[in-house]
Length: 463
Ligand SMILES: Cc1ncc(COP(=O)(O)O)c(C=O)c1O
Image 1 (cartoon, rainbow, N blue to C red):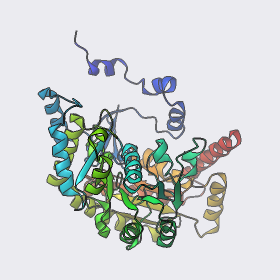
Image 2 (cartoon, rainbow, N blue to C red; image 1 turned 90 degrees about the vertical axis):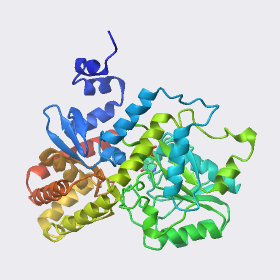
Image 3 (cartoon, rainbow, N blue to C red; image 1 turned 180 degrees about the vertical axis):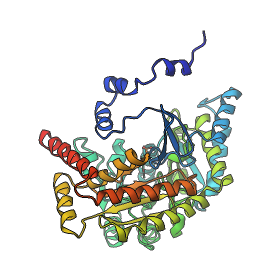
């Protein structure tokens, strides 16, 4: 009898949590059970997930930004099926493949002009690792500048550029000669660059943790300063790139020309892990400068045909379905509609973002009763209020979203770029309801708040 994944899934239906509890990350299972996210999703389409009762959820998390096209897009599926049917020679290694050449050709046309070369890898963190090495080799300098609150991945090199202590704690020593500077602060950047020891400044055009937007002149001026002091300017577009902000690359909003541009996540089409570094020929020609250095950096699975086909199909869908326009239009409308809620709800300080990378900020209310409740929660654990928004959004309205970072009262929405007017209304109406409930003290949401505070205090004590 032939091997069947369908049958395997049927035989083990519902064992997800027990298997993970036994063999994978037990703490993740605990978290999901504690906050009531322990659903059994059985299928997915576009921006929706469906559970075993065929109940529909709107996914504003998008696998941390992977599902720009939504899930199981037919064009990407068809491309991948074709690759399988063709029995192509993959990963020959002592060869160069056509599909990787074609994806590189396409990406080079779509990235800013000075970027004419491509390096493929398997994830966002691998793209960051490559950028660190390439910058050091190209400039002959070692220092890497990054921003406070930055997130560039969790491998050791990328972690050395992580702006949050919680991710780094206990994993040191990390890479030497990496220096954090405040985001959006040109004086600090110039001071750091002046020693002329910096190989690169690596920056997210819009910071994913907290959805922090740059001021209008920041990125272009930062790139200019880097050039002036002989450092490379690296734009990490792993989350913000490929249409997320309503333009193909976030740096296009500010007319920036980087030396390297990093991408991953959405390029996968939601199927095959892939990452890439677009760079100037100066960088490529310097790193790969002799025949005996032709394999000086790389990875076994990079440029595999499935990943390349997923990338090609993804770019085709972004174009043919005009997803940049949809992301820009839906994002702008969502921001406007969410911001109309500010005057009605004291806890809500406003929404910000670009395209479909959106943050909702919460803060201390004015009235005494609400302020007392807020203070109690904040004392238990800073940033806990944001979970009082995400959990009811999920339980009452079947909307999956995320807290934007540790210790902050910011909720982040990263919807698939394919969302419709109806999906947007779903989100705005749900936020209206959740905020209204948050303003009822005492009330069901504050009972949840008390439970969350209890967990936080217990966790702190046991730590
Ligand atoms: C801006 C940014 N850079 C790098 C990464 C790391 O990507 P990966 O998780 O694929 O290693 C992420 C992931 O969230 C990211 O948002």
